[in-house]
Image (cartoon, rainbow, N blue to C red; front, side, top):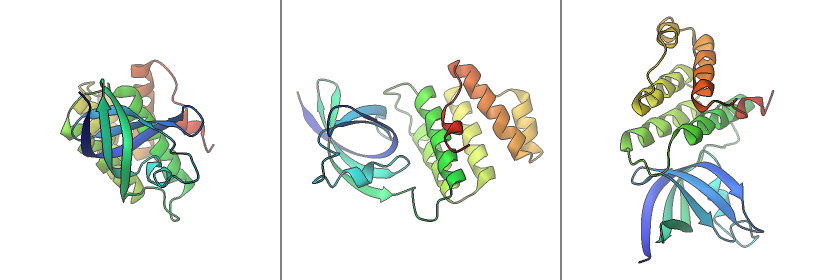
Length: 186
């Protein structure tokens, strides 16, 4: 039986489907990571496309039919991409959300994970690099991967660039593939 659902969500990925349609990957506080179809969102007449930028926190209305979600309405709560965002912030955002998208399974309902990811995105937006790395560490710990001791040691010594490199290598070892987002602006 189809039903309407309203939830706050973070846009973590989007893919073109057919002409005018997008598959949007959302991280929600209530349902975990979900995919939904945004039908006709790329049309000139659509008001939803501006709300669906990666890193944006939205209020969304979803239609659940046969365990598939259709995005019907959106409203921006917080937009990440602003005029003051630097390329390094945007690159870091894409990198972080790629990790989130690759490591989180669908429909894992943990409010703590949602809040950690939102805090990480906010830290990037506010240029708080050390807070961002702390949220990355919290994210990996909450998922249960455990951290190699060198990551914790490097973070405690406030050697953030080394810590970030170690986290990247650790995440790539988990997903068994290189991350692509870090190459976007280099």
